[in-house]
Image 1 (cartoon, helix red, strand yellow):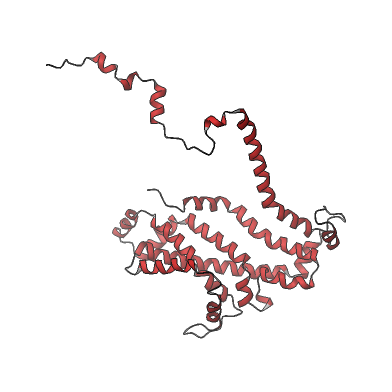
Image 2 (cartoon, rainbow, N blue to C red; image 1 turned 120 degrees about the vertical axis):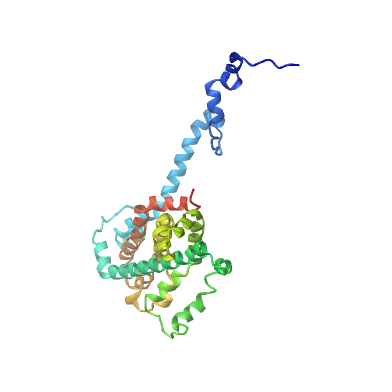
Length: 322
């Protein structure tokens, strides 16, 4: 049996060409993500009316839970002590006391304690970034033979509660091994333990692992040294995760209480988190609320200013697309 030749009309009527344009677009379109409620359910009248109401109620609840305590703290900081005790939820029965904030700044010495807190936060930031970036660079980019053993040891420390290492770490601060220095009542006693954070090292290492090895090998072929590779390639590509670690470190050191209380017994060296409970015994409750508002305001403002970089860094922390 001989096959008949295919004519031009038959070629022109193939199924791909006969199919409508919308069908071809539907085939090539990427699949859409589906949420909890399907598109068919969204067209129902009950869902169309109830879903916006639920979303608004959830949004209001989140706003009240997040901003409500801060607003109440501001209200209490601008009230008298009698108004706070008699009507905690009333809005300034005796009027707004604007002088509470400058009085708290001067009488409670909030400025001095905030300065100590800023020094601790900046020092912790520098030491943490130095240790976690260099450690992750060695484990992820240089990849020595003993790298997996160190990575496993660092990972194992995450399963240990912080209370277990509190006493050995405190004894180490009292007498440094080999050197024999006593770091108590010095900022180094807070900076050095803060730098040795296993979580930050592992997060940074995972981000470095996602950097394409082709870029690293190309830099080595061009003659880049390890220091050049670290400063000119790895760090510029890791700005998002560095920003995330930096913000978490600053906020964590700002609100830390137990460790600065142990290693900084001198009141002149204490941060705001340690000083406020100590001065609360001799300070009016209205000035305490004003001081607490000033202490809480700074980390909130930091997060609001850098929230875009923080959220972008969290989204990119899973890896880098080639």
